[in-house]
Length: 123
Image (cartoon, rainbow, N blue to C red; front, side, top):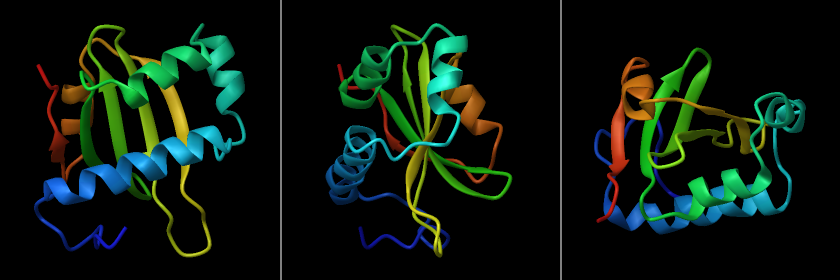
């Protein structure tokens, strides 16, 4: 992906497909945080729940800043599953960081500026 995470103000649609391909590849190849599967079990979230959030055209996708770097949040409004993905940075590979239920994942991401919408839910 050729987007410059800290310089791009807008997210052109042409970046959506490669971004989703990278996130889905990370999920399939189990590039996840060390404790993700424990978090899923504790939160009663199945791998299928995560998959639905990642692949559904209903999911809202945005970029936000979380303490030490950029994140992409994917929130599926029907299931209320929120998935956070961290892009590659330096020697740290991209990976799925966490998943949890949130009543309004959009508002959650907006609380960590700078917030940039990538894709709203498709009807």
